Image 1 (cartoon, rainbow, N blue to C red):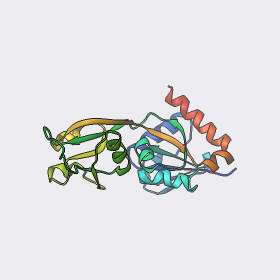
Image 2: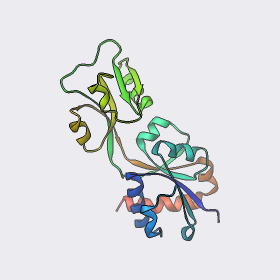
Image 3: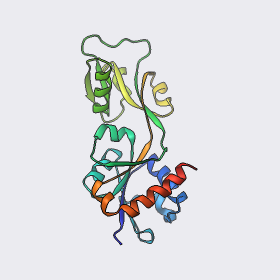
Amino acid sequence: MKELTIAMPKGRIFEEAVVMLKEAGYNLPPEFDDSRKLIIEVPEENLRFILAKPMDVPTYVEHGVADIGIAGKDVMLEEERHVYELLDLKISHCYLAVAGLPDTEMNEVAPRIATKYPNVASSYFREQGEQVEIIKLNGSIEIAPIIGLTDRIVDIVSTGRTLKENGLVEYKHIVDITSRLIANPVSYRLMHDRISEMTDRLEKVVNG
């Protein structure tokens, strides 16, 4: 039987997804949680895991180097990859929001928005009927309004602590985010039974 390859993001989603897989009855080795490897083989379950940056997971799945993957809805919205979304795992809850310095108006002429999510941000402001200039940043988004680079930011909010620590406030809630189980369309057809079995087992965990 061909092994099932799963792409997973490092960090919080990985940690929560591993707990779910164990609760679903998958026999993962004890050291799995602490592994620093990028590829982990679990021969007893006929599984192979690829650990990747969150934004890369849908790319790996779309191109078939991974049969399935676990990705945040924020990444799915931003990347718009051709993959099947099988299940909302309801883990890693957060949301995308517009934030900025308190009591400030957006510049009326070409307001600027900093974000890691240029496609999502562009779509949102277009839907609001606002013309903005999007500036893509890869880290420390919160600094952009503070140093005068942009009027607002669009970023992930979990607890709101990071915004508060940097003297920013939330202006608009854009969309709620959770992690999703996704599949490569060809793999889903060729390995339908195995992928469906995993989906069913995880769904039982989701539903408690």
